[in-house]
Image: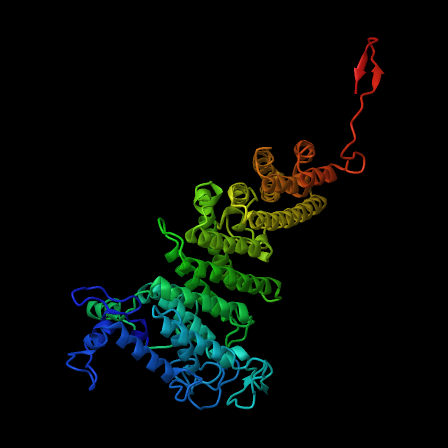
Length: 606
């Protein structure tokens, strides 16, 4: 079905393979026998070389699989099952489930629903208007099946045990009933968008990080056949490559990636797999889907690539992904259980997403893409939409616990510094970088008028993250001073004085914010110039009053005095409020000069 749905006719003399198909699958498809009713065609490829014949075939197959039609080929009338391997279902002596030895049972009764939805999603981006319209209507009707209704819980065949060994009825949500195995569905669509060989590399790298058998099975879950080959066997490697699918066309990937993004938006429990979520490896769904999504984003955003609707779709997907990953990361940080490996995996995904979106915004920050985005063409509109999603990623990351990480990836455009250590103050990296702030200040100056509020909101979110980190560093500095005082008061204060001084200096350097103020000052002066647009001067006033004033009050007051005379009333008001003169001076008041006699008998102006 997938080969037929992604197939489009190519010239007989061409050696190209349609996007989304494998070499072996394409040869098998076009070399198949023609139907009995065909008039003189030698094989399947010749029979459906005409687009009209291919359209008719796709419409008939669509009617065959559609859930709202008579046959619904992939939907079977069997009880709904749920994953309980880690928390209740019986296992055999190898640790695998007896119900299905080689795969995980998905929610809502097997893979049938997921396969049906995946096929309808593929056809919803078909180049033929009739096929596309019909697939969209069938998919819409299926997604509206339970609108205003409740999913029946009585048709379940297994139970989930709690931590005390008791059993309870599994919670089947609307998303489980409509999408089946949501994790396998999302993974399969992302594999179609990336290509089989590229996705295999991601799977291998992730598989080495997980030891739990259930987590590994979830990582390998797909909707169709999966192939593997021995790395030392050349023949198997060639056969495997011939069976690996190429990535879908951008037109097909557009609607498919939009659907995965909608899954992330609508289903807050998508990353909650059939494992105890208090286990460290229960982040497998989040890490797998996140890695595949970021890989697809990297494939579409290569040097020299232009903006496209597919790039817009994957940017929207990354925005939705970062919302879910941030919530997942915050929950792990706030949990009473220590999960360092899981936290590091999620942190790396958030840092990688920051690095990708900053690379998208870099041309705008430098002023290169401003002229291209202001000409009002369709391509420029897509670029604006893409950058809008990128600002959303920065806002989401800045408001999460990811901003408080010791490696400060948020403030360095996704690049991590130092090494994570939550217990030792001296092992933390000093907060010195302003790369992300420099990028966003450039965007606020060079961005098109439509997106300047979004750039300003991203700057405000980053400012809030800086304020939180500086507050945390100040608390660590106070704790360090108390620790040093306690160390001096105990025993001989002159013993190991050099060692104590070295440790103290290293710790003070880690929590010091002097270098941050030195880095920020030139940036804020540059943003506060009268030649800069209002959004840049407004951001400079806010950063000076809320952040720089806490780090370097003398230089901050100098800058705020300059901004208090700005032509814009909002910028001037913020600066005056920070200085504390907004009630002493009105807009129309004029400072008068008083004459005071000097020591030499002359007068001085004050």
